[in-house]
Length: 345
Image (cartoon, rainbow, N blue to C red; front, side, top):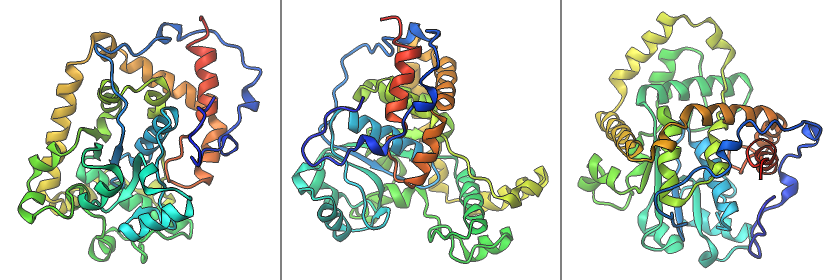
């Protein structure tokens, strides 16, 4: 059940999927051992203000859903971009405030695509929000951008950051549509001096937590003790999406290897370094977690898959709402937890 929101908070249960199709399913209490999971060594603090700098094609939709779900559960108020899905400047934030009838001082979280300007963000979240970023292997990220662009092209849709003149020819895309910004261009505050913006270690240190797409489960678990994630958020790792173009069905392993060889030469060295440092950091933080949490990865991924299957109807509802990171299947997941995890209480 969703928590009671503060006045003016745009949370409507009717926007979330129902579990009518699953109402007759009986519980076997298979996961009852996880009823009080996770147990942290210290009591985490819910941050007063939260910033997620959403980097496209880095697992960001999954992360946005997780953080939005977390915000709803802890009665934090995120501001959604309007009318486009990116906070490009302060004027768009102001327009989003007007459209949602929200006062600037009531905003607790920005969990969206944003062209990160620290001075601009400070107006709404104060000088020290809890900052979260995300990275992905740069070559895989660009491959994902290409396949996603093809998918949209085949669907007759357009997404400007991919390319308005999308072509099935990879060489043409590399030549004409190389428009996906690097990790560093998204994550380094634009009002920093140039020398500081180009310092990979300083950019990494600016963030309180970094998600690594290839280590998503570890990334979620290492965030847990920092802000107090519960199973409601941890199981968001089941929110993975996949959009494959029809053209990809004919690609051979040699085709894909050839594409990646081209991309290796295009990826900025700073992106590779940022990814490597962030990946090392996640491993170090994960190694410091209680053993019970470290040993839970396989179980949690299995649970997430079962929860996703149980709430299968919610995926359609979520996709219909667009990739703005709604806290997907919040109500349905709650029922799955009651029937399969918290059932022995």
